[in-house]
Image (cartoon, rainbow, N blue to C red; front, side):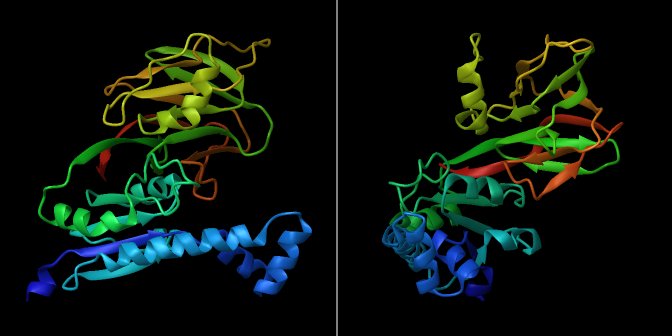
Length: 298
C-alpha cells in the first residue's frame, strides 16, 4: 500500500553523440572510421558518452527503493503520459529541460548536469549525486521551487504552442519574413529575419545574444516574472515596411499579435523546428505569457 502511494520518478535523457553515431553507422568501428576521417577524436566522444551514462546511473541509484520509476528518451516525450505525482529528473544539457517543460502540468522538475565541462548548467544546476536528497525534498514539499514563466502562441484556428525559453515566428526558409505586427493598438508592416518572444528563462540564451547587439539594450525579465521580451531580428527599412516596433517588453496583461504575409511561415518554440505550427498567409497569432508555469527545483 505504501509503495502504491509513493511518487514516481521519471528520468529523462537524450541520446549521446556516441549513440547517435552508432544509429547512423551501425558499429563502433564504422563510427570511429568516420569520425577520425573527419579529423575528430573518437576517444573524446566515447569519454563523453561514459560520463553521461555514469551520471545517469548515479541519478537512478538515488531513487528510493519503495518508489516507482521510469526512464524515457527525449524523442518519446510527446507520447509519454505524465502522472500528477511524478517528480521529473532531466539529465543532460540545458535544452533538455526546455524540451520537457511543455509536457508538464505542475510536476516538479530537477535538472541534472552530467558533464559540467560540456554544459553551462543554467537549467541543469544539480550534480547527479544530489538526486536522492532532492527527490525526498520534493516528495515532502521541502524543495525550493521556482515557478518559471512560460510563453504561448495561439493561432486564430485554435492551435497552440507552449515554450519555456522563446517562441520564434518567421519563414521556414532563409527568405525574409513578412507580416504585420500589432502591439498596444499600433500596427506596422515589417520584413525581417523573424520575431523572438522570450521569457525570463530564455533571457540567458538566444534573447540575450540579440539584446547584447542592440545599442539600447533592454533590462530583460527574471525567470519568475510574467513579463516577456520581444525582438525583431534584422528589420528591413524598405519601401512599404516600418522599423519602429523592433524590441520591447510585454507585461502580463499584454500580447503581441502577428498577421502572416508568408506562404511558408512557421512558429516553433525552444528551437525545436520539428514541433511547429504552420503560419501561412492570412493566419493570425497571439503571443503572451502562458497560464502554465514550470515548477523548477532550484
